[in-house]
Image 1 (cartoon, helix red, strand yellow):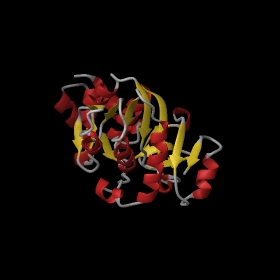
Image 2: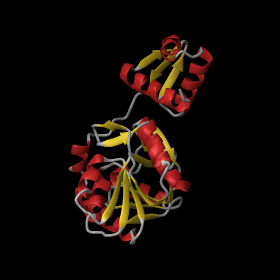
Image 3: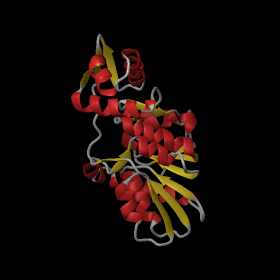
Length: 251
C-alpha cells in the first residue's frame, strides 16, 4: 500500500473514531509501530491530530455549515464575485472550479460560454454545467462528501494532477494574515493543494465574511495566489490590511 493511501485511510479512521492507538493501526495496516508513528507525526504537522503516549486524538474541528445553508448566506456578494470572476475567462481556457457556494454561482454564469473546458470536484457544479454541449466538462473521481458535494481522497488527487489548468477558481473557509487560506477539512485541504499545483493562475473567490477567520487546516499562503475577488463591507479593516500582502479586488 502506498504511503499516501495508508495515511488517507488513517485520516478516515481518526475522523470517525476521534482517537486511535499505534498498536491498533499497526494491526490494521500490518506495518511497524515506527511507520505508524511517522504517519501520525505527519498528520499532526497537517493539523489533524494531537499525538499522545501510545496514539493520537483528533483536534477540535471548526465545522463549515452545510452547503445548503451556505447558499442562503451572502448571496448578493457571491453573485457579484461570480460576475467579476467570469470576466477572467476567455475562449479556449481550461478552468477548474473548486467546490463551494461561490464557485457554484460562477458555474451558473459559465453556462453561457462556448469552447471552454471545465474541470471540477463538485457534483453540483458539474450538474449545473451538464446541459451545455459547448463546454467540455470533466469530473474528478474520489469519495463524495455529502455536506458540500465535493469529491476528495487519493483518487481525486491523482485525477487533478493529470490536468494543466489555466485558471483555478478556489474557495476557502478562512483568510487570515497569520495562517493564510484555511479549511476545516483535511481531505479538502489536500485537494486544494493539488489544484493549486496544477494551475497557472489561482484566483480565490470569497465573500467578506471569510476574512479574519481561521479554520483547522492551512492549505496555501498568499504567495500561491494571483488575487482574491471579494465583495461586501464585513471585516473591511482586515481586507484593507491584507492588501499589503496580496492583490484583492472588491466588487
